Amino acid sequence: MVRVKICGICDAQSAHEAVEAGADLLGFHFCSSDRRVTPEEAKAIVDGLAVRPSIVGVFIDQDPSEVREIADFVGLDLLQLHGSEAPGFDAGRPVMKVLKIRDDVVPDAAAWLDPIMLDSWSADQRGGTGRTWDWDLARELLENRKVFIAGGLEPGNVGKVVSSYKPYGVDVSSGVEASLRVKDPDKVRAFVHAVRLAEILS
Image 1 (spheres, rainbow, N blue to C red):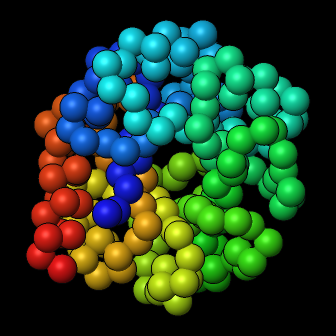
Image 2: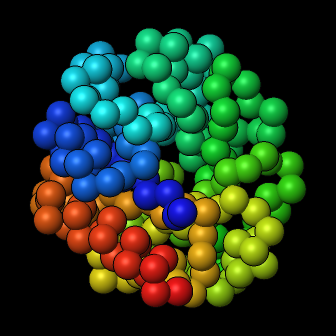
């Protein structure tokens, strides 16, 4: 089953609606980001969920001790690293390294354990970009590794990604927003539905 990660959760309502729609993972930004939340805000949201999916913390070049403190406080299951962190980063939780596709080059993923995430590179955005990239570039990696695809996904194109590339997971933030920091429940449901339908049909 393809894992669906709804990222950039900023409020309890969006978290509840994502879980209700069938999200497998919820992502919270603890880095420099328009969708940044405090550990206290994230913990309150997570603690208020009736059903708890995997909880992911997004970080960019932050000290492992800071990351570990946040992970312990919130109860994170997975650490998503968007910066220039080196292999072996240890903050007491499993890590998902985000590798950026730049100039049609897929970075070497050999030093990082699964899962990994592939996203588009941007000169002015260190986190998620909201921009698609040439998924064909990663076909070999997708066939051999547990890879999340991110970057410009939305309800209208995620089905094609799932049916054509069969990734381990897909990640979306801005593609299911009503406005910055606020998820659109209809878009979230449509996104998850498109993933599940593509799985059935492919």
